[in-house]
Amino acid sequence: MVDDELLRTGDTEAPAGSTTSAGTESPAGTEASEGTELPAGTENPVDTDAAATDEAQPKTPVLGDVLLAIEELWPESLAEQWDAVGPVVGRPSADVRKIMFAVDPTADVITEAIEWGADLLLTHHPLLLKPVNSVATSSFKGDAVHRLIENGCALVTVHTNGDSAVGGVSDVLADALGLQDVRPLSPADNGLPEEGIGRVGELAEARTLGEFAEQVFSILPAVAGGVKVAGDRNGIIRSVAVCGGAGDSLFDQVRMSRADVYVTADLRHHPASEAREGTVDGRPYLIDVSHFGSEWLWLTPASAALDNVLTDQGYTVEVKVSMTNTDPWDFVLTPG
Ligand SMILES: [Zn+2]
Image (cartoon, rainbow, N blue to C red; front, side, top):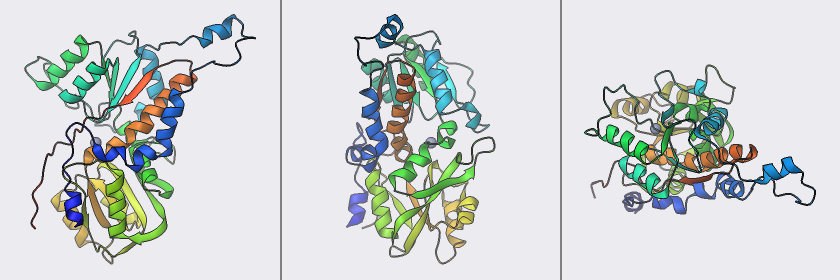
């Protein structure tokens, strides 16, 4: 029964599904490896002059250089007002050779980054979203700040600016689901027309909700909570709205988009229940996925994008995506 498959308990060490998911097979993933195989200035060494020889030497960026590249890809101006993005820990003058990408700055992720020798940990979620009065090691956040500093690892947050930007979290989700004619659900106030929160697009071929849910399940890392679906399993869908992370504030935009189904995470009882009560012909159907999983897909293309920008500037860095599963749930019980 599908339910049994949906209840695969995620390996706590690795988002196991990701190894076979479309996310890692996506063109973006391919770009990652191509990007790392493109050392700058490997052209014919015979006619190189002194300047070209300089260019051929691997250059190590400092954190300040990497922050400029991050701003180019995910401008802070695209972040929501309530958000806290940008550098959290680290000196702009410090060398950055190894950059790890992760969804959450948890203790396990920080350990993974330190053990790998990362000079920079870039996470989607902020460590310090709310103001704090202390970073004493008696709190896990203070301990995280200390461990990062003591091990020479900077921390940078790319959160709602990473959601909104072109190639952002929901763009990656839409791409992994094969959506076409993709546009924002909620366009950015001060960005390009293609920037904003959430995305909506069309499937190349109509399919049933059950078939589509299986596709959603297959592209995401395996987590204990699986995938939850509201709607007629045999209902036909063509248009799809997505929002990586918690998306239950976008129901009005989903209804206006006339999407047949909405894929997002953290759907709470009341917004979900009221959305189902207000449907037309049962639509939009709802697919509730792991918050972590929906955002983890972004890490590979994001790391490739940053690697490419730095490579274009003549810098050489090593990028890596964390394989620590930071979905907080470990198992579920269901009837039957
Ligand atoms: Zn999130």
